[in-house]
Image 1 (tube, rainbow, N blue to C red):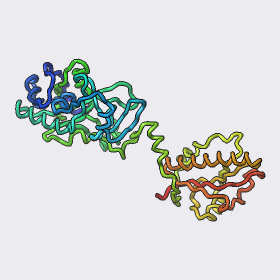
Image 2: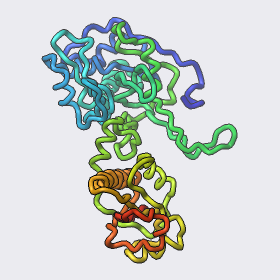
Image 3: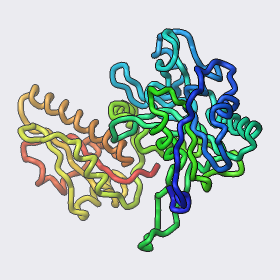
Image 4: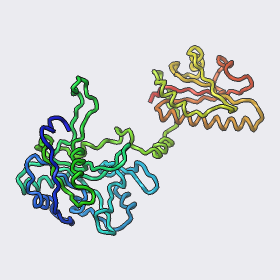
Length: 379
């Protein structure tokens, strides 16, 4: 939490005695009855399970996979029957939040349709019944990338400053903060989980001491915490990322007459297998004075940083055919690797390339097959 938010002690109190929630139950009434001590500036943290139950988000059946599909807009990763998916709310979570715990056998529990709206309704109800100005957070359990175990995160909020942007501020040493943005709603959700637990059937907790996080207006809710797919550097699982790479367009991209990040080129070249013992080869034209006449001949920008002449060794027909097939696979892998790195590549057959300037680098008994150029993409 920010320093001003922690001006005093933070106390988290479980709310006991809330009965099994049924469709249509008034959660604000239940909370007000069992937590009359709620005061101005408190944050009431509510498990999504009782919100879903009160809103009738319980479905009959045991086909969890079908229920997950109904809540899914995009599969992020899957291993066997386990799926990490993006829900209609934008949340990325296991099984789309579909839960078979804390419900009667033969039923499944879905997430609320709009947890921010649910939080606003509970907040409004508490104000009407108790005359207090509070914040409300609705929570659910998430796993975390790079970490084992699960914790509660906010999936709905009203009257709470869910995110605090520190970008542009300076720390105690005068360093400018660039990407620091504490997710207060998630921090409060995790703190409340410590007293709610998973099996104690305590679905509500009251957090006191964070008055500075409670706002006059309902605010944007948790939608302010949802990262867009465009900004998500890890929007796919490893296997799914490989599948996505295979779908990348391999159409020839126009090579730009512009500087190229040579580190990206080297990463693309890392996909080339070890050529030891192979009857094919790639001879890189490293000297700029040799590259330029070759590129000029085929109409490519002279700034292209990587040019290689591909050849196959002499030998029997079957040996040359096998070498050509292997070289074709290497060429395709390189073109795909360039697409992954955002580079452009161009393959030109030997009939269009005059490589006399680098002929000495190609084995005398070899046959030039073509030329591969890699550089910055114009698109």
